[in-house]
Image (tube, rainbow, N blue to C red; front, side, top):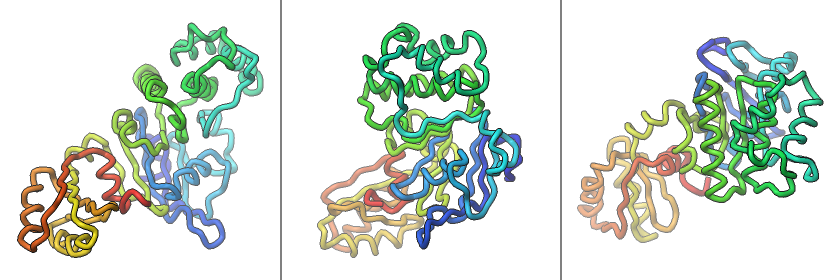
Length: 309
């Protein structure tokens, strides 16, 4: 895959970035297909925000190449960003203005916005009935959706969202999910969502990329990942964790990871749970808990080394 491939909205190849002696990105290779919601996942400090800042021209990578919407992209080609919308952290608005007037103010600071565009975005974000209300009366979820509307004013083909669900209650997350899904289904846009809320990403994303310590550890269809990967979690006493890990490491492809409080996660299909339990019992280790599943969170923990990462 190359950075100029028309099949991808975002590509990176060998992307590197260091802050002093701390390596944030270590040869990162991403390939985000067009027309999907791409879940960009990783533990804290894995390099997600650094990647996004490189893509948006906020910082410059030390090495590697990037591509946006089928063409190579460098810091010297900032006009390319006119076709990219972004929402980084919580948006800021004038609280004494209405949602519609806030969008008008933002629209006046950039390229001309098509007539009717603001009202169309308010409807797309399910804010048409509140567009005339002051933003001071908006919920956090409404402000997030208004922020996405602001990022879409120039009708970009690529939307990049960094932790858009931060601080939202379940109702706000549900509203945001519906809004993002409408964007992809009704406008054939590509959305990159960086998030740590894994169950939400599992309901939202079409494709996921998981990074750890600045490197890509998995990338591909979420449906395929969930159907071909699984996890078995076993709980033993703290004193038995290391002996149990040694036994489980002998199972094909298990890759045992201690999750804390006596839990060990291995990469295995749920139907092998009986074999896993039997292997431990034959060594005199009896599990006090056994869980199976193919949820994204369990796979994420297995790929990145546990919940403390």
